Length: 471
Image (tube, rainbow, N blue to C red; front, side, top):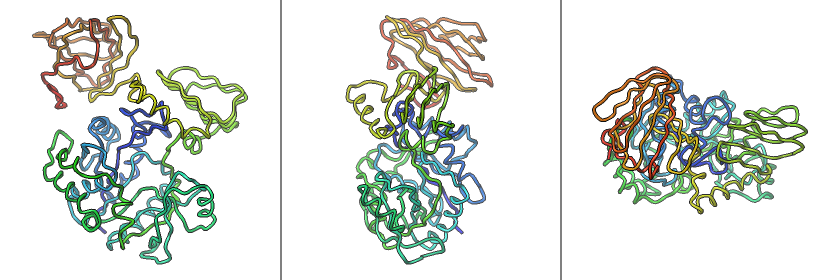
């Protein structure tokens, strides 16, 4: 059997899971259901090297270092991190992966980075069955056994012809239905949720794309022919890719192909698209509550309550979602949790930062988070990963005081190099060229006090940068 190459789609914002999920740190990068992030859970499902090649990751520019860091933390080697110049939906994204695959007849397993699959044995069995049909030239999608008459998913009507054991022809794809139609699908028993997971030979997918959407293939091929390599990342030519139209695999290929097939399966699958869905799959207490973090309840029932910072007490409430983060609190009825995205849209329209990022801002070298903001000054906590280094830089409008809380700091200040340990500090004058490094084996934790006439993050002039961000 051909090698199976996972192609993991890492885009999306997860706006219905605000305030945990933000544009700069979306749900696939969060630990929402276990100690691992959703991305790490996804790559762990395809980590058996005897069956799977290293995964190809597809993501945007903004998340590239975060995804690389999470793969490293999980001990997962990748087969390439492809940076999409802009979102163009799944058909072009998968075309980039198929063009990047080392062998044309390799099987490409397309997965989303932010889905939950709890029945791993069933997942492995479904892939094994689908691989037989895919090797024979079929384009296989995975049809999930519906657990409710959901109106939030598209459906696949399973055909009567079996193309391989456990894999059938597709009668039709159906758009998201109204409730009465969804109830009928459930009663019929021959309809499955469309989870957006696929298995096919890379060359067969490209052949079908050539037949049904040749303009998409042409744009993607040109983009990959002009691709550049930057550190761990593959950058398709931006101009070529931006000329590509946006379309899903379903519309571009699957609805038109005469080689489409479906593997019906029950995987314990959820796309974790809302707080209510997270409550549904969570471990509940005796009052049907799912609680995460520092939470107290009294006469509360059927709630999802999560605290990322402070004590949250819920008394005499039912069927609520309560989520507390350092900079925002969400309270909604569970049956209205889908509408959280309206808050995100409003935050974006009003040009507020809460839709984009939280108090903690992640960087390739670690993170920083705001502690206090005042007139002409602000205080931050800075954490630098072992062996990591900030850029050699300077500021036009601010000076900085640094105090080491934990670890060791190597500080370059103009022509000086200082070594600082716990409880030691230094001063970076306005206009001084400086760099902060962590030469140690534990994270470097620091407090930074900034003072000056302007404190924005855009007051940074980079001279050297190991992450290729120098000006």
